[in-house]
Length: 130
Image 1 (cartoon, one colour):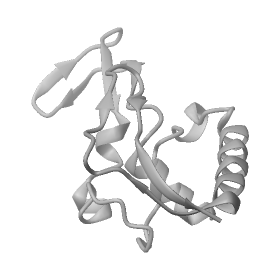
Image 2 (spheres, rainbow, N blue to C red):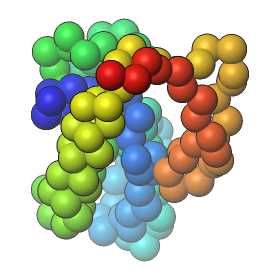
Image 3 (tube, rainbow, N blue to C red):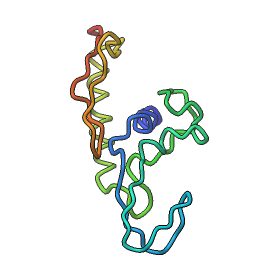
């Protein structure tokens, strides 16, 4: 299940971007940045980079490479990530114990809010009871 969750988190990162402050002069893609400048790192986009993940926009539970940035990296790694993962594992285990053939209702479009995350406003699913 951990590998499946990594792929899900890669595809649907709970956090889409993080802000950082430049600490040393640097040029990035032809743009000069100075100490104190603010930048945004788009984690959601990085987690779909085709050069790393190949067909990165596709949710693929057979994917071998699932390491991603959804909870940050290094000293910026989310302190709550282990608890979030545990809560999601328990929720999915309980759900899948009760239902089968769980799938998104393709007749209804996904509706999201923009911002730091991309939470769904609603998600229509169909399933069969066990």
